[in-house]
Length: 511
Image 1 (cartoon, rainbow, N blue to C red):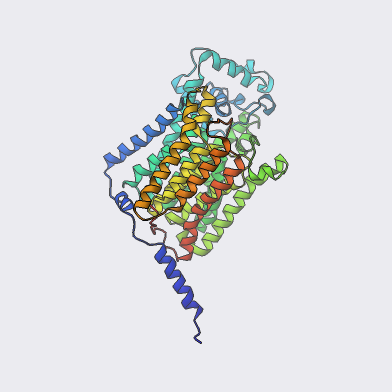
Image 2: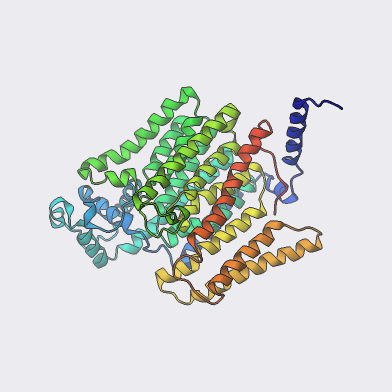
């Protein structure tokens, strides 16, 4: 009988994990590592932007969707009616977005003189306490034809995401390489990103994501002050940015915590407090909760368990913050300063965004945007492109099918045929890769799972049927998509902890 030292066993297990996490990179990943000149980087930016703008235009351009959440405030701000940019809540039936985007779009609308062909209503016409403001402004927008030019301002939010991705990739040693245009194009083609503009019109979400990514880039460079400033602005655009702000405050070095948090609060206060004061406090709800505190379509797991709407919404907002803070605390205990390396850092933030989707009471397509984008960037940080991720993005395309949504919004029924054909195209492409794999004597299980999930969902709905709203059940796709995304998001962080902190290991699960 031989006695085995436990430390030897642990060491052998760690070495095995190291070997599994460090296989030879694929030829495609090696090609992506090649340097790229500044000129070709600019070409990549233009190509990605063209893809994004083209997809939005193909679906009919920025749609009205939830545009009332920002455009009515935009027009009031553009014409100096700040006090009525956020009228009493009982005078409208929708939620208003946080102030940053209306302020920016209002400035652009004023600069471009949008709607100035018709005189803007006076403050006196808005009634006491602005009770008729939005009704009067809506009437003005119809007469001045200001809506479409104002919606087009939303295109500018893409620039924030582009800048955020480029700066984060360059701070993670993946910029100025073929990785840069490839990731940008993949993000531009991601359904949740262009859907945020083309269907639902939530440029404030796109802007907040771009500012958050830029903040992560500054953290990689040790500029915690600038990071706090950007995250404060991101919160003033859309409040999901707090899912990055809280864990980063936990990770921040002790000498930087106060500077980071105070500048984040200060930046948000500079944007929000003047609006709160000028509107006599009516903007406070939009500042604190924005458009995300509304129970609308429901259908998620949390919604189906039967909690009251107020408790469900409260749980869906507080629980993800607690989970992300706890995960950040554990990562700091295990990794120390290494938690700020590119892979564990992006992995942590991506997982925090996943926590939101786990506990959501609604699940619209643009809700998945932050998770999808950070998952793609995480692949770049690791140095791989997982075909599993491509399959997941394809499932997202089907789950939140932009064709049927755009058809319903724009009234273009001709796109119904494309909706019916889309699952057949996706299944056909997957089957083609499966056949090619057979010739190469390999089987990729995720391709088989992808075909099975998509076939089962479409067969359940009927191959020729066109549903009104999201295909299949919301909770079904929440169970399918979100756990997979969460596992992929957190796995690099856990692997870094287990293997002793080698954040830039590569995998072989590449295309």
